[in-house]
Image 1: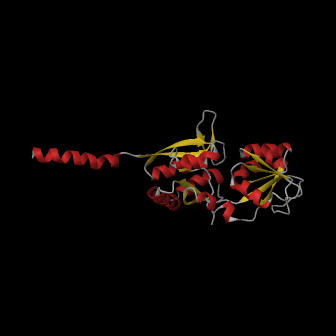
Image 2: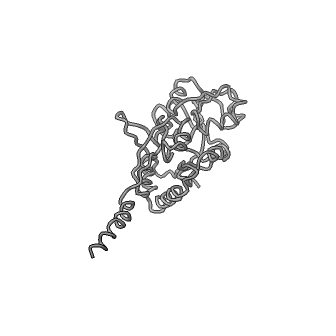
Image 3: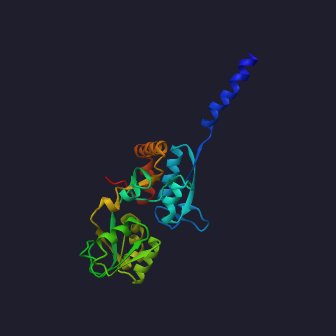
Length: 259
């Protein structure tokens, strides 16, 4: 009996150790605030819709996750070199990015639109932005869209590091309009300052090759097992009401998942 027990214990230990140990993942987001999706407090704690979504996703993965803020331009290299394990930072699923990394199924999808100063005569079309000074965020799908469709007609396309910087210049009159994620610009439009100075001019015509097919979790191309687990977790969050409960806190009854 002693001999059998001694032979069994090491095997038993090997079997239970993986089950007891939680996976640990580093989750990359942009260091530039992107409210209401993510932004830091004065103490450096990050909060927002996407942070809550990440917490819920990692709980379903039975994983411990660490938020890692990074410069947006370096976030894909950081993933591919192993400095982070996932990107959950409002990254659109585009064909160009899909050449470098893999994506989960989408977890939200909102249109791209234009907010302009009141009194500016313009529409969200190539012809409608003729002579307009237009702000876009660096490294965003909106910057790519502006360069593709608006570069020949806009007076100038000015690139900013953050949406907040764009909107500050818009309210100060240094630019005429901002091209951005419609939902991300909504809190500004609902603020006293936004209502006083500016108005929404509509969504641009969709181009999936540039604007993508929604926002997904960025993963290394070889991480097939993790991608499958993330997709299952997203599906569970959608089906059991957790996703809706998180969204309700930030967006009310507005659906951000899309079609």
